[in-house]
Length: 148
Image (cartoon, rainbow, N blue to C red; front, side, top):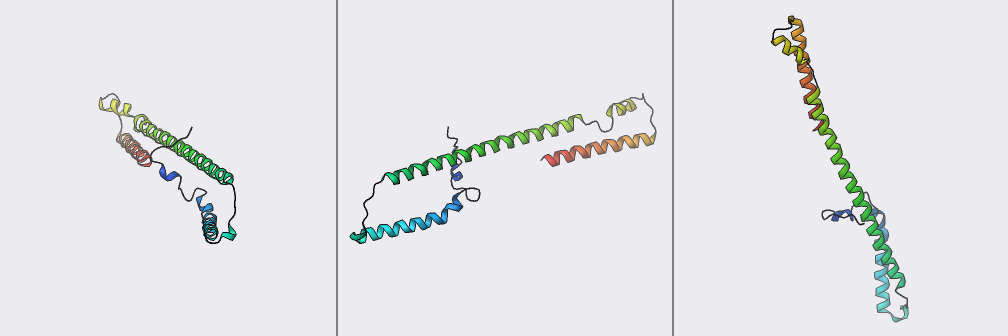
C-alpha cells in the first residue's frame, strides 16, 4: 500500500536527508555524456550504434520502483512522526490537567477548617500555609509554561 497524502509532494525532493544529494553530480555528468553521444550519433553516421531498448526499459522500471519505495518509506516515517507528536502533546495535556487538578499545595482542607473556626492556628502556621499555596500556584504555572 502506498502511503501518500496530497500535501506531501516535496517528500520526493527532500534534499539533506535523502539520496538526491549523492546522485546529483553523477546524474548530471551522465546526462551530459548522453547529450554528447546523441549529438555525435546524429551528426556522424559512422558512430551510430544499434542497441536494444530492453536495458533502458529495465533501468526505467528500476528507477520507478526505487522512487515509489522511497516515497512509501518517507510517508511511513512522516505518518509515524505525526502520530507520535500527537501522542506526545496528548500526554503533556494530561500532565498539565493532572498537576493543576491534583496538587494540594497548602492543604486546603485545613484552611477550610481554619475559616470555619474548627482549628485554631498561629500566625506562623498561617504564613506557612500561604507560602505552600503560593508555591503550589508557582509549580502549576511552571508546569503549564513548560508544556506549552
